[in-house]
Length: 101
Image 1 (cartoon, rainbow, N blue to C red):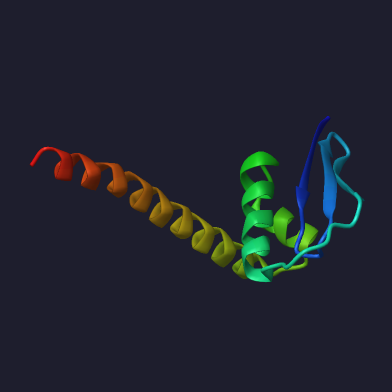
Image 2: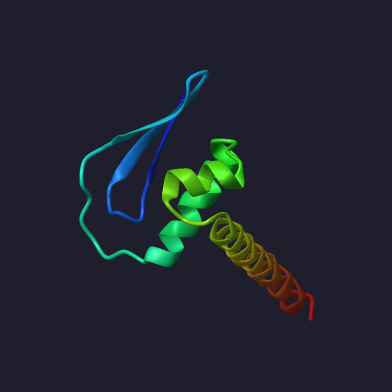
């Protein structure tokens, strides 16, 4: 059985277990601080998809979102990650070009 933990949009970490019996969830301690619900929903979907190996339908069942919304959350998250990678990779290239002048 694989167990992993992540923060949810509900403001507390949750422990997930994926095993022969399916997916089970247990709550951790409450965490304080400001939350961005859309970003946290994206993080939760990405974590369940890529770390937990769940299907869109399984993610929808776990999170309470529709399958369509899960697809949108994953698309938005990957788009954001891609933009960040492009920005991070462009900065060293710009410094290298300035240094060669």
